[in-house]
Image 1 (tube, rainbow, N blue to C red):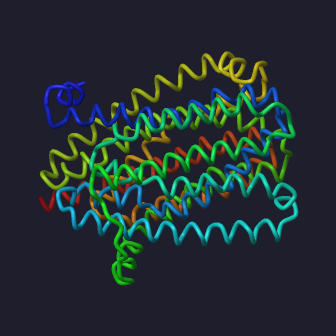
Image 2: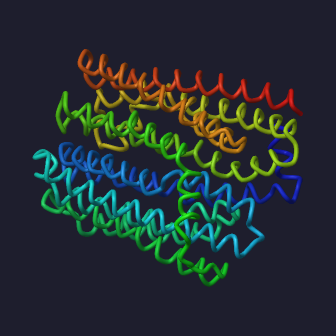
Length: 425
């Protein structure tokens, strides 16, 4: 409680509230509007096609992580530190954008190769190609820049307009199963439009200029994000990949039932992600000022997240039938049960991001890699055993068990760093 009162009373910390509200709008719409359109898509396209769209989105997530390459953490930190140096900002912005575009083309090449090699993907090639537009939009949208300078309010309105246009377009033009391809088109256009306008805004408002950077500097920024990239890719492997594994052992119908519950969980997890993104630049500055003060603030945020997400977990368990009824138009018992099981992971999901950012702040990125690598192996073990035995329920249970292990490992690493830091200080 003291943390929140301090934020309200101190002018320098009021920026956190402004950024939280702005980022809350941005991230909230990214998850809320798809949730709002789910009932319509289920009614119009059916559970099976809905499952296909979920698999295509999950597949594109690999390329979004590839092109992002951890810059949402490393570039945010660099921007935060050098926000008053215009020449340095131009350097960071240009280097990051060059690398992201390069990685995007690599991702597109991998997509084309996958569609050619695997018949089950090639049969729905159009859906997968159109969904890749989300990757293009993410590359164009430098949200890491706005987070670093703590000016998230600039992009909130833009996102509201783009997302609502996406929702309206879906409701107007998607009328039957033959229109399924329009869903990824409109979704991708929303990402791309926001990206283009944000680049124009950065150019005019912050006088940021694109300047080609030498190979040595590009290599430096590339290596800076390596551990975070490995971490994010590993996280994706034990989240989105699970949908593919489920599809192998079941079918699109079961994937669709799972995807409904998963969308609700993702939307709620985003609440913790918003807090992580808002507090990251703030905690980075605290680390530079005082190690002791940093840990005091960190634990207050940690406790606040645990209390808040625990409350949300109980609400989800109690109202799960109502949520599924509202979302799908019918009370799908299997989805209700999946949502109740997976809700137990809500408490731990955001804490993983909080610890990862702490490791980056303390310049121990290797712990991010270690944590996610071991978690990936444990995920493969749990999913490989539980899904063949218990199907979709096994996957839900595995998700909870994996998050417990991930939290435990992160906590051990964090305590080790804390003891070493305070001893030195």
